[in-house]
Length: 93
Image (cartoon, rainbow, N blue to C red):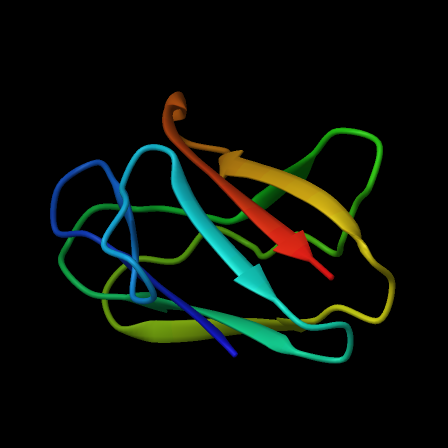
């Protein structure tokens, strides 16, 4: 299970290892990554790259977005609002 917090500022923070911008998490095939929103800025989780997953909509305030990864690969993502200022990677093994 991966856990990523969308920080009060402009950052993704890994709950697994504390890495941020880029947040990096490794999960098992069949595992779920959950992003948690807090704060007042709008953010999203947008899949970028060749291995992809369904992107979230833009959220403001509190909420969560979860994706279960069924295929191994390296999944890159960013925030549609903040782009390269907010990035992350999910490695599925």
